[in-house]
Image 1: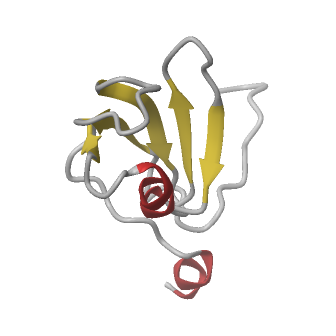
Image 2: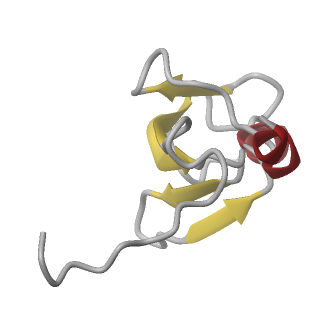
Amino acid sequence: MPGMKRWKLLPGALRCRARRFLVVRHEDVHEVSGVGIVAEGIRFWNGKAVLCWIGETSSVSQWDSVEDAIRVHGHDGRTVVEWLDEGWPEPVAPDVAEKE
């Protein structure tokens, strides 16, 4: 379209989009956040993840990976990730994408 700016895409950006997920807690060990859906999340094309915690004291946190976030907040398997976008590609490391 005339007048529209063309953006340069980073390597891997077209092959791997953000993927949404929920953080679901089956048992609240600390009796703070309750059970059920406790956070919404997004995993980006490079594997980084952002969580938006649900509750009276809501916050947003960023992580190097979904696995890192669950390692901290998973309470030994009592909290799990439920993916909302199935079948999407896994993250692509920038150096790998540049070589392809």
